[in-house]
Image 1 (cartoon, rainbow, N blue to C red):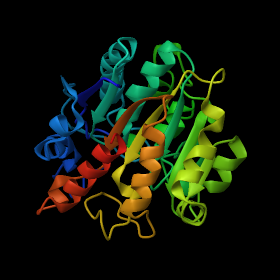
Image 2: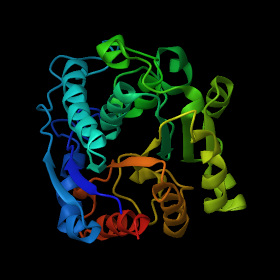
Image 3: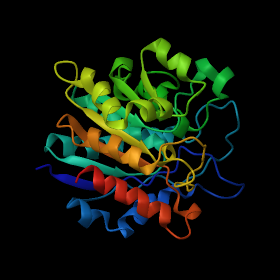
Length: 299
């Protein structure tokens, strides 16, 4: 039996304001999923909260690099300390975000311990870096850049914390749920990052894609892998409560099969959940679905 521990990482530092004078509501994700009874339904131990710094972009402007970089760097180290302690104790952290920049905390924690992989279930690759600005626009929001930073691309203050960058090797990353025709696909494949689109998952079957993708993440190559789950991998018809509700996403049954196959692997060491914004979900229907999918992955 796995010993699950539920840990909140309610940082919204990696997202742009949804409107002038407002802050991204993803910091409410953890509380909203706990309202769905997630702690009890998972049978998890209480792990508490890693409190993030205040959201304040100050005088930042386009061209200044990643906003909140110093705050995100400090938060990443603190979150990594907590995740590393749980991993060393043999526990399985379920980390409730927050935006996608919290994945840096897991990547750094695993890098301290050895070589680990990443299974990212995400509607986009989050691979924006200075070398592909012509495709993805200028860097700025770490929540759209964490995979690039984790593989050593971008601002050194975030991509080389503790001198341990890159935290992940390209060949140890598996992406699931990118929209067909995603503009990052050519670069991802050129650098050796395996990316499986919605169309491929639908054609081959989610379970089959997951099992095949994990073949290279077994010993001696890696000591295990982490799951990064971004709610925007779901189609907006069922998950509208995200900052980028792009059409053509996975349906709940497809995500459930994919997530379950990955989470039940004995090689999986942890999971984080990101991007769901309760401010965009007044009846909590999308939150209930997300909680059901997370619980079902461990059933």
